[in-house]
Structure formats: C-alpha cells, structure tokens
Image (cartoon, rainbow, N blue to C red; front, top):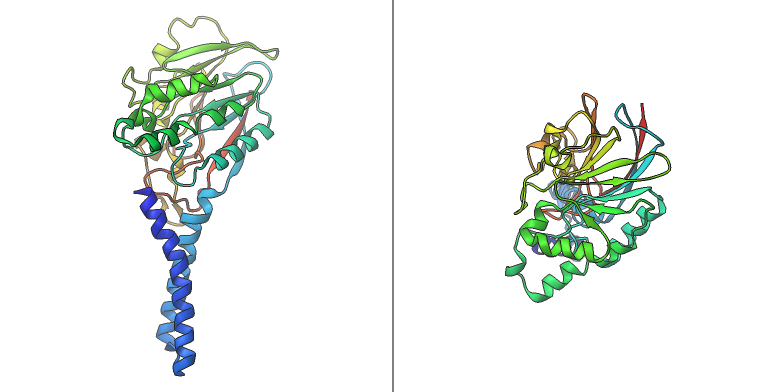
Length: 316
C-alpha cells in the first residue's frame, strides 16, 4: 500500500504542473483564459498539491534532533545523555540504506552516553513467510548499518509490534549478530564512573513470548540504584512503578500528521493518544515518547517531522 501511495504521489507531483503548463499553452493558442472561477480552482488545487508534496515527498525525508532535559527525583549520580532512535521501519517508504546511514551519523555526532533503540525495525504488517526472498533480504539488510552506532555504555534495544508481525526472532537475531542486545522483560546493570544504574527492556504487546511487565523486569531488584526502562509502546507507562526514573517509548510516530485545530490524526494505541509525543510526568515517574524516524500505514508526515532524541537525565 505504501509503495502504491508513493507512486500516486510522484505521479501527482509531475502531472499537475504539466496540466497547468498545457492549459496555459492552450489558453495562449486559443486566446481564452480560465476565468476567475478557473483561476480560483487552479489556486486551490495548487495549494493542495503543495501540501501534498510536503506531506508525502518532503517532510518524511527530513530529520529533527530533539535535545531534551529531564529532571527526575528518582535519578542519582551524574547526568546521563541518552540517544533515542525508534520506528525505523527499514526498507519501507522513505527509509533507504543511505537514509539510515545518515540518521546514524546524526545520532553519533550527538555523542550520547548510551543509545536505546525502541523497536519497529521492520516495515508493514505482512509476515516474513509471506514476503518474497528479495523483500526479506531488503528488510534484514537495514539492520547491519546499526552496528555503526557508537556510545560508551553500549547500544540496547527492544522489539516492536511490526517486528513481531514480520518475524520477531529473526529481527532479534539480526540485531544481536551486530552486537545490539535485545531486552524482553529483562534488565542489565550499567556500571559507569558517574554512578551505576539499571536498564530494563519491556516485551512488546505483540510478542509471542511474553507481555510487557515492569514487575517481571524489575523482580527482586533490592538495591537503590536508579532504573531506566525501554518500551516500544507508551501504553506500558500506566503501570510504571515509582522507582523507575524514566521510561522511553516510541510507537506513536507523534501521530505523523499534526494539523492546526484538528491536532494529531493517527493514534497507534490508547497510550499513543494519551501520551502522543514528548515528555510526560506521572507522580515521580517520567515518560519520553519519540516520534521515530520512519512512517507507518501511510507514507506521510505533516508538521511532525521524523526525529532522533538526545535526552539528558539529571537528578532533582
């Protein structure tokens, strides 16, 4: 569907200017102009054409670096710079290998202490078993470039719903083959000079192995070191325990389309509607929802550009 829409978008991008030029040529040849009604229609269609160019062909290929400061009463030690990359949907519309390489370079240039990948590496809804060998190869080829991500405390990941619709275990193996550890209701202790902390990763709601659980992820965690949690869906934040300094999530794409007056049009889940984009607080806990870099369902972005985020976590 996405590729079909892109073909239509490119066809419209070319055909409307051609139609205007042909109409002007005919008008000059016959000596008759379009009249005020005709000009009004031309202006309105041209405005819609321009918005379509922006939404389907230009904005999805842009990139914003969001730098966010978060003060958490549950954080201890020196500040932590967290690089966030989510919803790549590799090999989908607007997500070529060259674009992935450029996004990686942008994130590396920010020099984060740790990089968290928040799932949805695969595009579309069709299982790998129902895709051609060529398409499967294209999807898996988007994972090895992630080995170029650099952070002194490592690169860590969770899986998303699109990964499980595709083949979650294949995506997991592809990531771990390049040194990116996938956490699924698991935690790992991160030691650093500025103070150790725990990093947890929640299972995806579409996982075939588990459902997201802070309780399972943090079970029997008795020390007082702070906790950072990765989740693909922001929905999980509803059950976040107080001791979690911050949860990072993606999935929402920030709605992809954010219209004046009407607001965000696309909601990937109930949690994405409640916490669609940016930083939120719930008691002592914090949630940051990334808009991600790819597109889903429809290859469109409007007033909601793709983003990578660098979140600096500080003590209260």
